[in-house]
Length: 156
Image 1 (cartoon, one colour):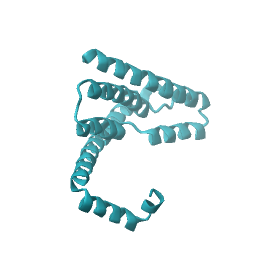
Image 2 (cartoon, one colour):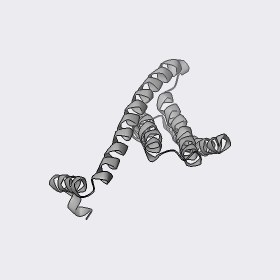
Image 3 (tube, one colour):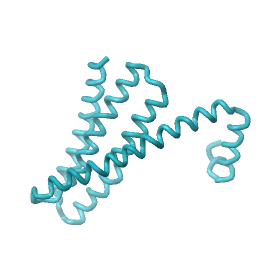
């Protein structure tokens, strides 16, 4: 089934068939997609503003470090842990869970920018800064997810 859906025409036929044979399921999935779309847009704009603000404030430090991307990924990691914990504890509707996690946090954090910033450090031969950036991002990201989950449990 998965291989058959690779062709664009088959995807359309599948979506149309879902709409025809299971209109309630189709409407529910489209509703969820709209929540993700709105959350993703909001998260992306928040990321852009946070990165600009942080990079401007930290530009005078004297060595190349992607403060904006770093901070956004750590903050986003905390919030995704918090949102997962709170949504379970408070039994939030699936649409709200998707808005907060897949949408807002997915749009706010960015692994692709993290990777590109790391590559820029390597190309600039800032190997020590790259290692610091890489390990701090990964370790603090995991710690932030745990802290967010713990905070969510305390709220409930």
